[in-house]
Each structure stands twice: as C-alpha cells, then as structure tokens.
Image (cartoon, rainbow, N blue to C red; front, side, top):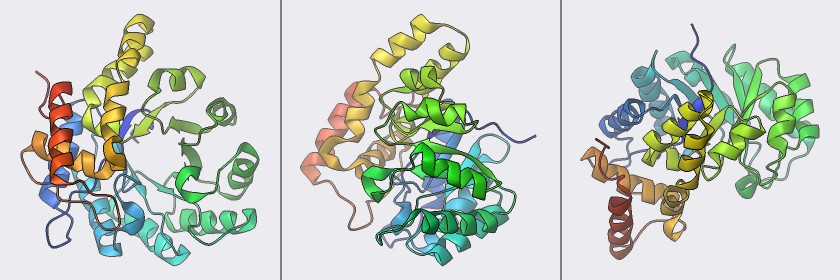
Length: 299
C-alpha cells in the first residue's frame, strides 16, 4: 500500500564528504534519526538539500540512498529540478527506477519563462517519472515564478499525475484555494504548522523539521487527535527552531552543523556558492542549538 503524503516531511541537508561525494553513511543516519523521531516522509534535495547545484551523480545518489533507507517506512519525494529540462527528466527517470515515492520540481530556472514553457517543462518531467505522483515546488522567493491558482489550473489540466505541491510562497491564503482544488498541499513554512493545517494543508515540509522532528510530530498528532490545546502550545514554541535554521542566512550550513553534532558524524560543508559559516558562527550555532536541545536526541 502506498505511503500517505501527509504529516511531517523534513527537508534535510545533503551530507557531503571533503572530496565532494554524498556521504551515504551520514545521509542514512540522518534519515533514520528523523524517522525514529516521527518523520512521515522527506522532501529530498530541495533548497536546503542544495538540489539545484548537486551534480547529476550526487543527485542520483541522494535518490537511491533515500529510497533504500526509507522504503516502507517513510515516503520519499525526490526533487529533480535542474537548469535544463533534459537534466530534470534524467533525474525523474532515476527517481522512479530507484524506488522513490514521488518527484517534485521547481519551475524553469534562471531564464525567463512563460506559462506555456512552464507547463511543457513540467509535462516532460512528469512523463519521465511515469506513474509516480508529481509535486509542484512553489518557491517564488528563489525562482521568481509563483504558482498562483490560475497557473496551477493549467498544470492540473496538463499533468495527469499531478498530486499536489509544497507551497512556500507568501500568499498563505492560497493553501485553502489549492486544498479546495483537491490537491495535496504541504505548507513550506516551518513557522506556521498549526495555522497551515487549519487552512487545509496536509502537513509541513521545511528544514526546521529535520532538526526538531519530534516537536512537529507531536504537534501534528495533537491536531489529528483534536487536541487543539496541545497543538497550540507546540505552535507557540516552534519559532526558535525556525530562527535557528536561518541564523546567518545559511540554512543548509546550520542544519549540517547541528545534525553533525547530533549524529556524531560529519555532514560536511555546503557546496559553493551556498553560504558557509565561519568558525565563530559555527560555535554560536552550536551554542544556540544545544540550548534548544536539538544537538542530542530527546529522552
């Protein structure tokens, strides 16, 4: 039976070695850690995972390791967006071949695109993924393209396997619109898990979930059980995890530093030109993370 697309879906960093390879051991440990603490699935190789600048070999390794590690335990939505449609198509084929549960994709990058070009890009990627569910990655802060409801309707008509989206745009109210369209809408903002659920989101996808999966999992369970008081208490205490991730404007680097400490293995540095941390900044991040209790597993 297919795993549900619902709940707590961390968007983790991609651990790397000093020579630029994906650190498969650290990636498996990260996924196991997050699943052990309540993760329902993963959004792999997104922006925090440095997906758009991974090499094709790195990207394929992330897909394979994630699918192998999570099979039957947590759903893997593999991001396959790339500068060229051909590269995204190749990644989508690989994601299907290695056993990922779904693919997601940013719209065309860098070069200006019109709606027809965006539809054709997504059609090609979705076709390459075969019968895998397809998710739109709505991240206008980085792509300069916002999937508004009118554009989403074009995608729905053109892509039979379109399942839903990660909605990271600032137009929060569109969560309700997308839900009313019958789409599986994840919020891409880890600061507002409870308001997003109330608006019709099925869950949250974001980097802070990889650092504190237990907190987001408890909130989601409380919501599902109708325990709004507990869900609200957990919502009221979620902001420090988000602020931690965004320290120094380096979310991927922060996540790697914190998870390296918790896992007891080096998750590596970010891939240039993604922002890195100085030694002083790394020490400050660890100090804040330790105070929040995310450099060790709870209990």
